[in-house]
Image: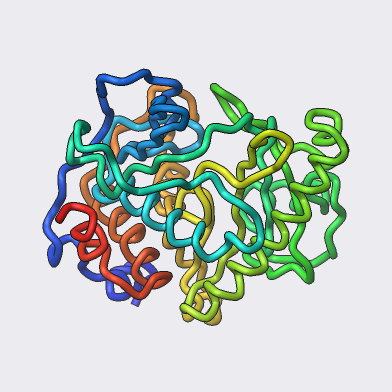
Length: 315
């Protein structure tokens, strides 16, 4: 049995059981638009922000023309789940999942009202396993973001201790890995050290929880913002967009079976695309299997059906 056949048996078949909900590629609300990101659209609402997760897909920092069913809802509902679990570690920006009655019903379940902050000008990445761009860098230099790693690691090897590998926050184009020293130059010593400490603490907490649910949390990224003088957690947390999840049962057999958008990245790596706009079209089967992975990650982590959780917001 080849890898893809085993993937199908493990993931099978979510969308046929649930039907397809409407795919939301963009919003056009009659309130002030603050920012339109690769996936999220943020509006001003009273003294706070309304953050809406669309079903757009970004890979290699390029936004694709096809949406992924359920994606925005999974991102939002998983963030809510994790914000609740980690609020004792650090304060976060979530205020409410309740959307004002004068706004469209499709926003429910994919939107959060959040505190407005001044974002930290760096992304905070924690790696507990060597893979992805870290693996490519390690193969060339034996290190990741200036951190020397042991010899003989393989793609997917678990690190003795998680490492903090920040990156730039590019409004357009590609983020770039930077050293911790460079992060200090950008955001200041105190903020960099606090962000590093909290990032590693958050990662270890989620890594252990995910393992108890049959998943390996290989790496993740966080965004922080200042609420006055206080650094808090913002944006999303431990979602299939911000994190790399592997099925533990398969990892223990030596296979890196991802429940995130790595499936799309793997497809794209086999094409002739140069990773610059415009992106190639995504085949229907890639869209379907990517959606299935997002749904599976939600159900494994929460133990609940996404449809039941969505229904609670729409009743």
